[in-house]
Image (cartoon, rainbow, N blue to C red; front, side):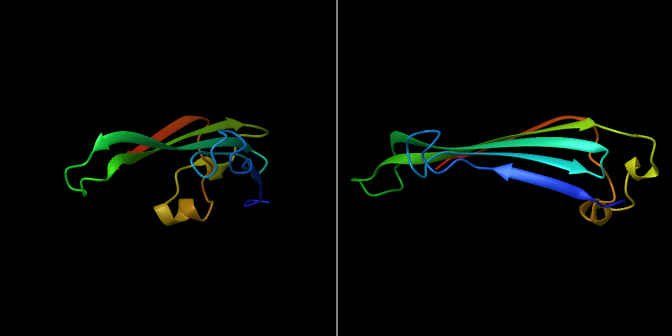
Length: 115
């Protein structure tokens, strides 16, 4: 089928990876798209407390929290690669509808929110 997909994701219970409930989280997923592209994704979320004085807060408030997110997507070709659906879609909406397979390779992303 042109738009067939199968995916599975796993997130360990809160506190299982860090020992601190609700502070850090990890998620891993695997997706097979149209029996031609296999993608594995990983996401790690950190909440880091820092003991600094914020001049905009009350004098008794010491500390801020920084939030850090890191993600990685690994995609590899499997099966027959000679299809027209690998071509770029006509619009971003077409890509969201699954009319384009992600290219093989590695993508990394990171975000840092200062508290």
